[in-house]
Length: 124
Image (cartoon, rainbow, N blue to C red):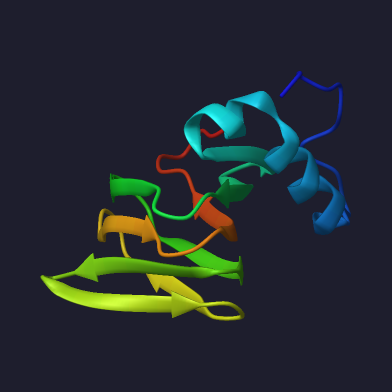
């Protein structure tokens, strides 16, 4: 996806996700890898990323130093926490503590919003 000149922080930001998701899925990087993300907002410690995943794509263990949420917009995901398998379906959201998301896999073509905060006192 070609870099765009767009703000990542503003007092109010509204996103129309359908066209952005369509752009992700039409990108050659997505066609090659089956996954692609777009950072929508980067404001202080907050990060909001739209992610498109093709069916069968595994993210593996996601190492995060801070809590995060995954809101599933489309599709279905599987993941493990403490050795227990879970499934997330369209319209659901899950909140993970630091470093707790393991073996995340798209069971079907999926789209999600990943929200996380960065650690430390000085985030840009």
